[in-house]
Image 1 (cartoon, helix red, strand yellow):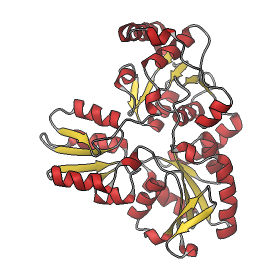
Image 2 (image 1 turned 135 degrees about the horizontal axis):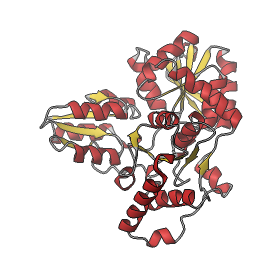
Image 3 (image 1 turned 90 degrees about the horizontal axis):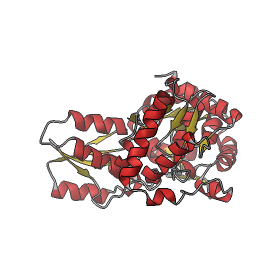
Length: 369
């Protein structure tokens, strides 16, 4: 469900006034008390992009799928307060048992990328694509998508992918069908396909608003159909940023996330998933410089964690992901208080039919490691 849909259905609870007047110390003490009181019944996963005020209480820190899998394996946890965004909490609900309740501290924590592909647009586009290419297409969806999109992909023989395994999953997809529809991030799809040797002229972009293809080559020769979507954070890293770093910090290595544009990835020294970025900088020699093209909360954390290196943002005017930043200390405390009081807020549930089909897409990916 997109943020607009939630507003229209008035399903967003607003933070009570009492949490706006509490001091940071009061809130932190209260969270610690609840964690101690609930023990193993409570599990708090925290995404890498979360604020430090929240991540300090995380029982596990990682990427979205990793956290959902850890939550599913933690069978002792009755309540999972997922500090991330909506699609991540949905994935956790899909993978966890019916006995576990997944809670999102702030329902406004959506994802602009996931919201760029809704199920109605996707089904209309799929029908047009089938008319154009026949039964030659298999869909793949980035994990950064709604449960409904994952379910669509599952029903149509496809799978989910992460930024870490996009390449092997794309290779697998081409053993199934002649063409691949890649949702919803065009940049990850383009970068991955290009690395596999597919030329840009054999890629088309599907514009869901105008319901038409954008293609610089022969449409009949297209191998990859890229959904016209992007991450609003990673789209802010530009060729000009790279050129400026090359000029002002010629000794710095540039490492970016593959959600950045093809032009930026091509000019960078390294490109890879969040985990790849963290591990690369961790393993780097002391004294090295790193300009990082990803979300600001993580960049700041890397700067503070690896003080033996010079780590800074590729874009000096970068800000943190606005929707990730919706999860803050007051909302986390409110969510935990609601559990204690037996009036759970923001309980994330995916309808069984959607969850079942979405799990097919997830399982096809997980079966390939």
